[in-house]
Amino acid sequence: MYGNLSGIFPYKLFFSHYRFQACVYFASVFQAISCGIHYLASVFMAVTPKFVCSVPGNVTSILFSNSSSSRIEDIWTLWTSTKNYIVVQLENGEIWELDQCSRSKREGSLYPAYEYSGNKSVFSCSDGYIYDQTKWKSTIVTEWDLVCHREWLAKLTQPTFMLGVLFGAVIFGDMADRVGRRYIMWFTSTGQFLFGIAVAFTFDYYSFVIIRFLLAMVSSGYLVVVFVYVTEYVGIKARTWASMHVHAFFAVGIMAVALVGFLVRTWWIYQIFLSVTTLPFVLCCWLLPETPFWLLSEGRYEEAQKVVNIMARWNKVSTPCKISELCSVQQDDLVCYRTGGNDISTAKKHSILDLFYNWHIARRTITVWLIWFTGSLGYYVFSLSSVNLGGNEYLNLFLIGAVELPAYVVACIGMDKLGRRNTLTPFLISSAVICALIMLIPQDFSILSVLANMAGKFAIGVAFGLIYLYTAELYPTVVRSLAVGSGSMMCRVGSIVAPFCVYLTSVWIFMPQLLVGIMAFLSGMLTLMLPETLGKPLTNTLAEAAELGTNKNSCLGKSPPAQSGAVLEKLEMHSQESHGTDE
Image 1 (cartoon, rainbow, N blue to C red):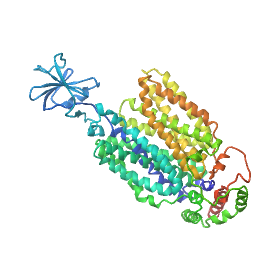
Image 2: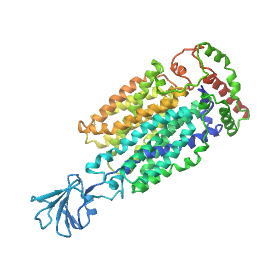
Image 3: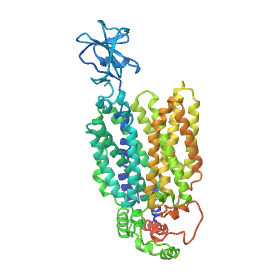
Image 4: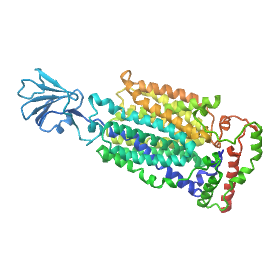
């Protein structure tokens, strides 16, 4: 219904005339920093350092290749391959060879030598492992010995988190349409703080994974709902930049992970520092109001009027609009709607099946889901490949987050000047072209490969950032959170698949780029069939959404006053007249 409510908040006057919306916006998107932090926290928390089997006794001398030492810490700088081993001599004279996942006791050897062809007794690493603590004092890998036969548990850390993100996107997206955006934002932001701190005090791997799964659910839930929340509060002219800046705050969270990882090298202290960033929002999130969009779609006119009155006082509008008066002008539409045999007396609860309301909406949903999946797949494939750039890994992660900021600026300019569809299509196709170019670059040209990889991340970042807003605009208020939530679900499927896609380098080194390129090209071509939403009012019913991109105008095609954007056209005019009078 309140498609044009967003039209009363022009971006160029966002700070001068719309103080209320500005405060609500920045308060709500600040929490997106915490979402970015938790999504990427495991990059350093689950690091596997260099390691070898421990030995049953005190070491007196250590031999590695042609170097000897009395401290194993001096050997790590020479360790270059997992096939290396260390020779140690104990106080009792025993000589052992230490591999990563086994240890061998030399029989009959009196003097340590690196090469030995005599008899050996092989033992398992029953005394634990010795880890390189040069970079990290402690990680979850060193805490619970997630190496060798338990290595797969460490590799499941990020996929299980993304599985939680998938569930959270669907569950909280649907709940936000049923109980309201505000309550879900309260619950999920508080959950991020509590579960984030709880992760640091988990006592074993399995409790760690369970708490992280719950943390993923609430983090995903908040990120999904905040996009809908800010979209319903800001105006048409500001909507593009406002939604993209949510991504920018998420990218700041990635950069914060790099900074905290560089400063704090113990995983549980690192987790606490990252989680504390949530606290300021938790203390003030209860002040955030419900959106007039949702209140009006639920028929709660008095509550919506209260929010509008508060907005008017903050924005210094002397004569706030009366929703009841604006709705009364739509009685003819209501009669026309009822004449068509429709009954609006009973509020309908919507489900994911409504995203397949008719052929037009179903085709739109399939295309949107494919774009979400491709964007996430490409985003994480390019990111995981960037980890191997060499140099300082903390700086690399910082740059991976930083490269998103100009991508979102380009996306904003493109969406405002060219339109959503006309920006999304070329960047999806260009990411496919970049994938093809990467496959043509010789492996010896590392700098060129790095530049191409970052260009691919930039292109997919534009598309990935744009799809959030585009999805919110393609669907009506009654299923908007559900649409964004289900899209985010497909996005998380892509993020779960991405690590396994990278593993396919064992089949062919460029297999990940080939798969991403094919998906990006297919998505780009299908995007051409989507309707353009630039400058269009938000729809509130599925019938209105189905008519996007068409020129149909009929009495029966309209929604009743509780669902029509025409009321908000009056609201927009009223707001502009009020500002003109105040000035």
